[in-house]
Amino acid sequence: MSDEREAFLEWARTRLRDAETAVHNGDAGPRFAIWSRREPVAVMGAWKSAVGSEQVGALFHELAEAFSDCTSYEHEIVAADVVGDMAYTTGYERTQVRVNGEPRRYVLRATQVYRREDGEWRVCHRHADTLETDRT
Image (cartoon, rainbow, N blue to C red; front, side, top):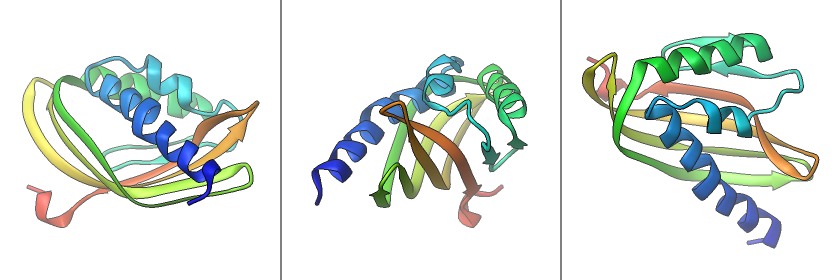
């Protein structure tokens, strides 16, 4: 495994994971910090989608308002790579949280695309869907 790929995966296992845990606890700030402000950006989410920085920002606030009391967030990266200033991850996100006050447990299949901006990784695209067996 290349040093560059390993450094990216370490970032994903720490800063990305921490940002996702924070948004599931009602704080969108850390997620904003790792997302690109440079167009194009898009979220094709399990519950909601957004295109463009303004819509994506509004979506993050909406999600943070709905989520609370995250007791578990695990990101199992199945595949990932870095090619120049672009990278991707694909895998499973297992979350236990309150959504609008109701306890929920779900698994998402999630693919994200990242670009390096000013030496830092930034998320520029997210696609996630709920596993068929988890839909109720």
